[in-house]
Amino acid sequence: MKTKLITVCMAIFYCCTLFSQPLTDSQKQAIMAKKVAFITNELQLTPTEAQTFWPVYNLYQAEIDAVRKNRAAELLTVKQDSISNLSNADIQKLIDNEFTLQQQELEIKKKYFDGEFEKVLTLQKVVKLYRAEQLFKIYLLKESQNKTPGTTPGGK
Amino acid sequence: MMKPLGTILLIAVVFQLKAQTATNVNSSTPFEIRQNALRAQLQLTPHEDSVFFPVYKLYFESISEIRSQNPGLMTRAMNLDSLSDEKVTAMLNLQLSLAQSEANLKQEYFPKFLTLLPPKKVARLYQLEKVNTQNMKLVNSPKQDIPETK
Image (cartoon, rainbow over all chains, first blue to last red; front, side, top):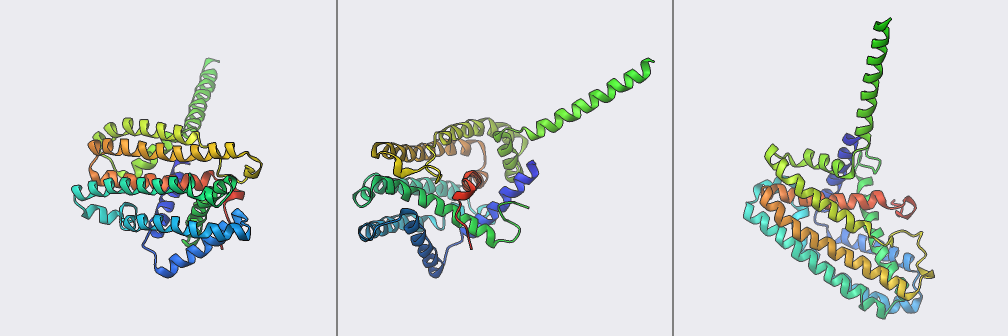
């Protein structure tokens, strides 16, 4: 039981490190296209809502991307081998930086989910958007596992 | 007459012990499961193990407590359209506040971990925590809510 759990965790970690490699522009575009389709379906936007929502969402996404661009080369994407090549001071700096960037991302989320999105969506749809973002992350995680043989969620 | 009875008693005790051991393995607490996974990954020395896990347990319990307050927004079983503006606002605010509490907790504990473990192991721990969080989201999401992949 424990061995199986550890194996699943390790398999998922392997997938995540693979998945967290820097993406090419075309991969990013493909993910964004899927995300737009996913959110559109989840929110069931009216044409009027779509017209006012997407420009605000694009601003939100741009702000998040700017923070993540700084995070892209950071802790999670540093492979285990690379960690051992870094000095203790560098690692400490990476950890501090990670928390700073994480907080910045959280502040952007608060700004939009507790303000900007309410100007263009009903409150119920703002919450649906929050849920859609979470579900989309799970979708990507599941997709990355399915692409890696032997690392399906069943963990066999 | 006494010999067979003693043998039967001995067998019964052995079976009882075996059953208890099996039960203990299957009834590991979430912390113990996590602890074993981390032990396998972090390769701690006995000293590191003894100083790290008591502090990690406090962190683990606090983060579990925060996550247990999740208002359950993430399941489609909750019909958001039927809820009042006040209710959905309260749920969203709680969700954002829990995300902040979790970030605060990590910022509080990782400097502590750095006093107990070498930075390289703390960096690895950070990676493993992140992956574990993603894993938990995947495992805890109701199956019907996880979108199908192609």
